[in-house]
Amino acid sequence: MGERIEELVRAQRRREALEAIVEEFGRKVFRLAYSFLEDEALAEDAAQEVFIRVWRALPQFQGRSSPSTWIYAITRNLCLTRLARRASDERRRSRLVTAAASPARQAPPAYDLEQALGRLPPHYRRVLVLFYFEGKSYEAVAELLGLPLGTVKTHLNRARKRLRAALEEQHEKSFELRRV
Amino acid sequence: MRSRSSCDVFDELVEQWGPAAPAAVRRTMEEHASGCSRCAALLAQEDTLDRLLEERLRPPAPEKGFTRRLLERIAALPAGPALPRWTTWLEAAAAAGAGAALAIAISLPNVVKVLTALPASSVAHAPWVAGAAGVATMLWFACEALAEVRPPSR
Image (cartoon, rainbow over all chains, first blue to last red; front, side, top):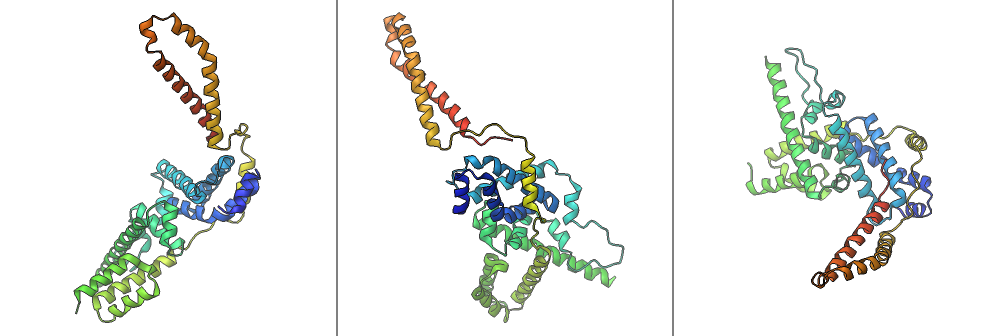
């Protein structure tokens, strides 16, 4: 947290402190929430809830631990709780999985990335999504997800391998359909 | 023809860096791929995938007015209990210690009264009993003080 924010907290200027925190962490918290919830409206609601929790805990914040670690941990826990609550929510699934059946003999697109992404395990997809959101920075993803750098690289590598395989498979199917 | 060792190095570079390969690493990969059809195909696949993901995974941003809406939500929250005065763990620990000392001072005359009424064989264990009681009292006060410094729940 910047010195300015710490000063504001110490001076008990809570509202200004919160505004400064939102300015610094707002986008990242929103993106992190989006990587879990995969819906912009839900991500915004979760991000707001995160900052309300931060607001409540601000008077006790001593600045001894990294605030980014603290705020991202709140975000992850909140999102995991919400995901668990709505495990069967169709809205989330429809964002990533294109379920529309292709008519017979019509070749599917060579690269149906949505479908391939939707088939990835959530923890691989999350790393992949954040990697691109954060300008291809392994370090930023590791910080946001609270994971070791090596784990982030491994997840990302496995996710890419699966995507390559899925896209290749789609490509072959498309080629077979065209031949029929 | 695939050169086993250099292809292994190529694979390792792809695994290690993926689409975030620094320029020097990327050059090494391209140099190898230029003479190796297998690795050239893999590099092309990686590039295609990277391009597709870049197009698909554009970072979303909260809608305009995010902070205003947040502050409105906060303003609408019911006023919570007065915030605890404790600001440091040190203050809490000092308070717990003071509380424990006070409790021992208050209870000491009664403890002495009880001990003097006991038979001599029981009194032999008195220091242990008093010590345990003191520790228990201090722990209780410490727990109370720590509960006080926790951030308020919703």
